[in-house]
Length: 426
Image 1 (tube, rainbow, N blue to C red):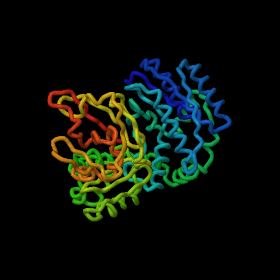
Image 2 (image 1 turned 90 degrees about the horizontal axis):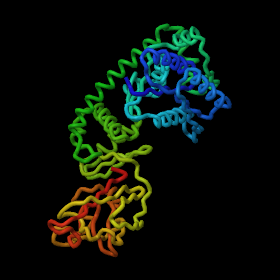
Image 3 (image 1 turned 60 degrees about the horizontal axis):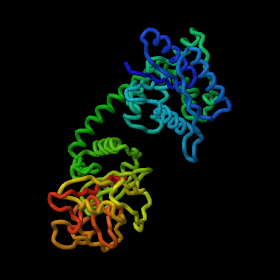
């Protein structure tokens, strides 16, 4: 049992039934729960609905919170998707570690979701629809009504004389889900009365299949993954059958928190990147993501933002330094390595490679072209112009993540400063 439960309370039939059931459970199990209402501002009646939700919670003596969000979609975005994203972002803010969010999704919602995912051409993860439980924010999200149909919830509401909000937009069949609910499912039910149960059973089968695919992907990923955080060994990857390549790539991208590509975009990765010449530096991108190839490795990173190599940023090696589109620089104390601590609090600058730079790395004996040092270290080309270079006047002191100039290295057994760079794109 969780320390605290949060009910996502819209005031509609489903969440009103769940609220009522929770008040009964609270008496017998002594659970702690609150209701959270997200006011989307999409209807003239939204204020009245929020007030009705609040009044009902006062009647049941249930703590109530309200969030106001502007769910007006920007051009090209689905209104349903925008409202859903803002709703869950708001709900996440109330969660404390170990808390549980409760939503009132039921069997019919699950069936609609499965059909919508079919229309989108989704694979097993999408067709598994909504699980009973999954991670959310700092806790869990539970859907305790998934075993109940909409008609059963209606019977419960009528038997207990419950009042609920009726959102007129739920009748608007220009929205995909409403079209599925009012036009498609009733037609399917007229021919196959058990279709909702069957679709829910199919979602369960797809959840099992998705789990097995993930387990296979984890095995393949363990073979393909390089020491680099975001790279895979292309030769190992190419030894897999194409369906396994697609499976492990989707799993890998998902594990990195990156947007999953469409089937066509994923095919471009296989055809234009994996199959390109060994010395090619290929790239396939989709919104927010770039997949690149370099020296037999496949890299996945957030899409690179605009970057001006002429930027010059002052830094004295004390406070953490954040550089947009580049990342964060900070120093870590060490002994006998890194920069001499005497450089701290001096007037230094961070700038970026423009070509022709040279540095004399510690223990290398003479000056080297920075370009060749990058090549030698296997730094991918797209990172080189974004790698922070520390200067004092016109002299390079260090290159983040690469080397320190011999002249400015800490002496043996003397305190030094390690330049740590956490990039925005790796």
